[in-house]
Image 1 (tube, each protein chain N blue to C red):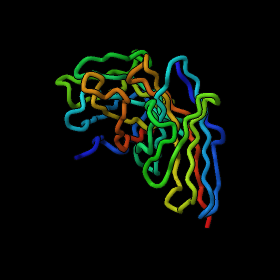
Image 2 (cartoon, helix red, strand yellow):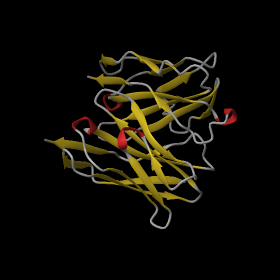
Image 3 (cartoon, chains in turn orange, yellow):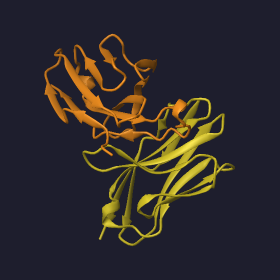
Length: 118
Length: 114
């Protein structure tokens, strides 16, 4: 089966510009996650979706970050305006979902988008 | 709440030698534990997982990990390192009360020398 697809793979922008990342999860996976990974650190959850509902966005900086998953499949993460400190890798992951028997929560990760803010 | 501590941000091993990566967790409920590997410019790939079945868990690429409740540890081992094992390894925990919430450690970078 195809894995999690993310685009773009790399993005360079100037500060104060907007940027958007796109994710297509594995077919049939109801749960979608966006993570932030700073250099030399583990991923940190930004937001989790169950179908089209954001069930955990407590770590999402809502003043500049937004996300959507309108039809419960693809998702977009946006930053507006970007700051220097936003330079990082943004990872998308998906899993089957608790209701689908995904109790052990195995998450499958995409390759990430590496953002550089100048 | 759950948390993970990985001891050692960098580990250097000789090809053919034992690989040992340490992970200690903190959890107020029975945990689920995971080891992921990340190769350069790639996403994370699941190596193995503990979900309250057997305490010795075998994963891909010859890796295994043992869940020790008394020590709150889930160390990752491989008997004989291969050059292709050079990567970053992350331990992660979630709890039976926090489905969908993986807490990752800071990672351990493994370098394999000839």
